[in-house]
Length: 189
Picture 1 (cartoon, rainbow, N blue to C red):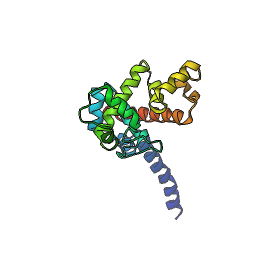
Picture 2 (picture 1 turned 45 degrees about the horizontal axis):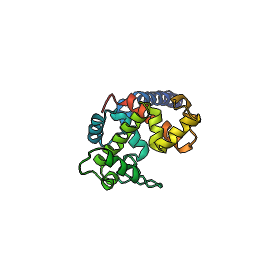
Picture 3 (picture 1 turned 135 degrees about the horizontal axis):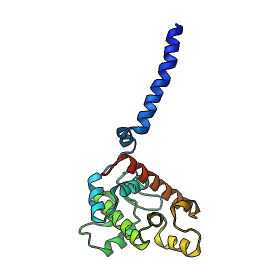
Picture 4 (picture 1 turned 90 degrees about the vertical axis):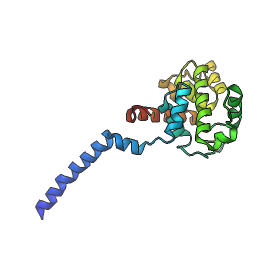
């Protein structure tokens, strides 16, 4: 009886160590915990707008967790949670064929295309500063410029904690968390 108890006491920690190692090091486990959906649509938009597909995936994960018909309490729609007014503005800026605000709210391709175009535009406006672009995606580019102009925030990743809006601060932190996590798990999409 004592031998069995001793054996169980030895085996249980070994099993836990092995499971822990699998959890930390396993690509398949990471892909299971952090799945990416709509990879074809993400790849297409990433290529078209010269963005990292893993960045688009991270934004989608935070915005809607891959739910096509998501609607935020503030009225943002679709997989990349674009405000209808922003979607209308985006549609006037470039040639998007048959895409519409309505399609952006319930079709993966439309939502990812408009959201990716907007990320690229924010990157242009903020000279490629990803942290500023992400903050602007959430709070709006005018608000982010105001923070920069008044010295409230300098736009650096190391000072994300200084973003005055808690929602935007948390948003940028979460997108960067998932972006870095996806980069570790997926070499590419």
